[in-house]
Image 1 (cartoon, rainbow, N blue to C red):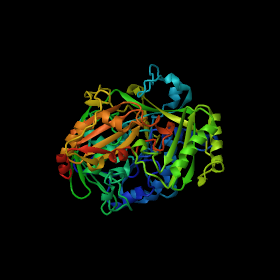
Image 2 (cartoon, one colour):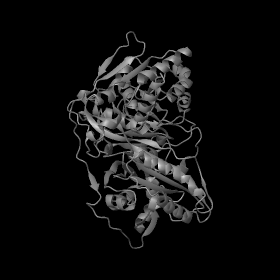
Image 3 (cartoon, one colour):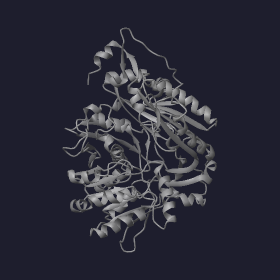
Image 4 (cartoon, rainbow, N blue to C red):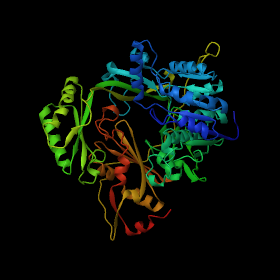
Length: 605
């Protein structure tokens, strides 16, 4: 273990479908000790559960991310040569099958890697067999009873923490294949292991979580999805982020020299506020982190130093990500052309639903190219062509099938200048997300090295049994402070983008928007005027619930949670942007009035 020095951990993928060449580029680009590969999103586990069931009928193994095998094998000789270790959650719901397939391919190539496996996060069978007496599995977002969905359950996976990964590193694993561990733990564990930190050294553990949070989405931390995207001068050979973690917990975010992308303080700030809830209480299995204490500073070209994270003991619970069958959906589109395309699209919209004559639980029409992402916030200009998209959701499959059969008929019985863009819409079953909690005492995790004697099995209880010292939230809710528009003598109207940077994301049906002031004068202005009620007003066409606002003075940022804004979220949503990714852009394009003196301070650092 390294008591001194720096641990260099690189990210080589932020989701299943990310650039397949990144692992090789990261290993070729310069010195690294570890590479992490994050493939799993909350709904991915149910997809893998379906995959495993279908492959089982064909006598094959499934339930893991097949793509990982090819990604790893391409870089395997260089990984071996340089001694770089890989940690991934590609195991999905079947880590053993993933490890066995990788081992098979490595043997063909004449390469020897010690492969570690983590099992125990998949509790689907135990839940179905009613093993966990006393656990209610109440939906932690809606308060609904588990009884509502227990007979439709597709998957159930616990978010595990760092302990099993650290255990495998202690056993000498070169590659660690996990299932549903937290995204941040892939980075946290090697920092903890190499620096020899105690699992109760809360501030250092918190620092490693912050590093993991920055790296987990890959290129988003190195210039991707950046508000000031024009500052990125090179988009090819995009550099993925690297964390250089010191023994005291401070770290530097960087990338390999000569690669595309951009790393600066504002880029890292945007990633810090991405998919954030209460910034004082970022809860993980291993530590509760206070993001309001973090300090950022420039450390050279494409280098940002991060320090000051504060941690507290975790809660006695682990989060469980469940997925359940929840009805059916379909969507189809036609292209509408000519200068009067908007008028045609509105006629077709009205005509289609009247002809169909069916009442659905949910239906949606999107005018893509006009207002499908930004809704009422969009400029009301005229488009030359519009992709008119219809979508429906219902528990009754026959209704969805009827919908699917009707769209194509519009091309011969509607206005001129329209065409179908694809075949008959496919009816898809919907799998919805159910988040809940389980007591840590009920979870035992198995770790083992493949082909290490009798395949040693180690039972590990993740996290700690202590109660968390969570701070009381400092928050503001829409409705409690009524929204009132403002104006100033000699005021100026500007786009919010001239004042702020922003990043948005999702957690279920809640959208988050992190808004970062460009300087301290602007921060004082937005902290006063950009209330939760103001954001509720701006997003009134999307947000059906309340808005909660948190302040991060250290980042000169506000974090907004917009509840009931994504039409149910995930696969249940009929929105074009079901994850709220474009909400930040919509807000940045919104115009507000500012006082004349602030206008003169807009370019001040």
